[in-house]
Structures are given as structure tokens and as C-alpha cells.
Image 1: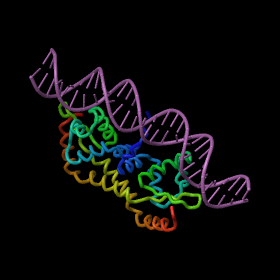
Image 2 (image 1 turned 90 degrees about the horizontal axis):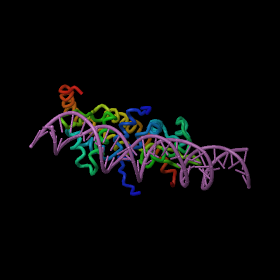
Image 3 (image 1 turned 45 degrees about the vertical axis):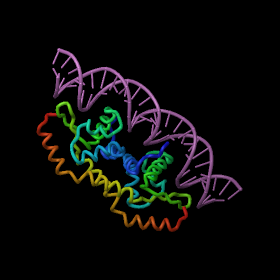
Image 4 (image 1 turned 180 degrees about the horizontal axis):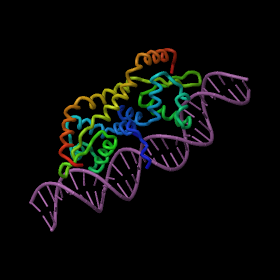
Length: 110
Length: 110
DNA sequence: TGATCACTTAACCAAATGGTTGAGCGAAAG
DNA sequence: CTTTCGCTCAACCATTTGGTTAAGTGATCA
């Protein structure tokens, strides 16, 4: 167990699950407890808690104790880093790549 | 085989692996063959080919036959969709969330 | 105090993932 | 034609993932 995964690995992996993306979407509107996050998720409470744990390890959410509840708050920095990565590779070379792609599709039958 | 995964699932999952992100990074500069993509990846040829397959199923790359090679070209649309998703949830509520987060950290010792 | 509520942790399980080797296939080269 | 090259596919394996249930912890309530 070497704990070698990068932040990008953790963040993108965390976002690759629909239950966790739903959590992020709801947390973007207001902070929610683990119980509230679990509610719409046809799944056991413990299962939802594990999903929150994945988001937390990726740095995407922080859990704060509030009595016997845990209030989950979205953290913007890891999402911002992911946004920058995707933005860089999704927009910079578009024109050039699109031109190449068109050329290839014209020359081919497959 | 129920084929129920959404595009977002496939795209974020594909980006959650460092070998595949390296492929995307290199493909953002020029189209490359599977062999070229495999080169820097301390891994068997077949292994790299499977990674390309994951990117292809997510729609992130397209493979074009060119003689006995396959030229891989980055597709901008799925990355653009991922960018929009992340952008929406990483920027819109920042100020509001940051304020909440500061308040929570002040009230707490954990 | 004792019960209940909100949540985490541990143990477990099936399925998916990331890797391997080896066989196979079409295109290119000799 | 035969060989080699670039690549894919199938089978296999270990580890991780996404889920479960059951037990444990600590805060609140009656």
C-alpha cells in the first residue's frame, strides 16, 4: 500500500461515479449532512458514507462535525485544478485537431 | 452487459488514470499511432492498446486506419462536455461556499 | 440512565479494472 | 510466398471498486 496516487487521479476517479457527481451537484447549492446526501441515492447509509469518503480523500469535500451530524462542504480548489487541466487540453488545439480529423474522415471509409 | 454508463461516467473514469491522461496530453499536440502512445508507458503494447480502447469508448479519441498503423486523434467534444460540467460546479458558488467554509473552520477545533 | 439518532468502521462479496502473455490478422517488405 | 510489423483479441490474474450487513462510537432525547 504505497499511497502513490496523484491528486488528479483521485479527483477524476471521484467524479467518474454518478452517485458522487450527484453529491457534488447538490453540494454546489448548499452544504448538506451525510444523511441528506444519502437520501436520494437508492443505497445503504454506509454505502453513501463511503462515497463521501472518496470525495473527501480527493479533497473535493470537507466534513465538519456539527453535533451528531457531519456537515459536508464543497471544496473549490481540487475542482478548480481539474477544470484547468480539462480546459487546457479541451480548448487549446481544437482548430488544428478538427482540421486533421476532417481530413482523415474524408480519406477513409471506416 | 447492460451498457448503462453515461458519457460523463466514461469520460471522467478515462481521465482518472495517469497513463491515459499522458496519452491525452500528448495527443493534444499531435495525432499519434498506438505504438507511439505506448512508447513512454512502461507497459506492454497490448496494455497500452487497452488504454486507448478506454479513451475510445469514452469518445475522447478516434482511431483511424493508416496502413497497418492506427492513428489516434483527440476528439474535442467529450472533453468539452467534461470541462463544462466541472466549470459549472467549480466556479459558480465559490464565493458563497468559501464564506461558509470559513465560518465553519472558525467555529471548530477539528 | 437508557434509548435513539447520525454516522463510521470492519468484514465480506461480486464485478470491474489494470496489467500480463500468447495467438491471430491484415498490411508491408523482402 | 513468407516474414515481419503494428495492432487487436482472448484468456488469465491480482487488486480495486461499489455495494452489503453488523457492530461500534458519540451526541441528543425522553
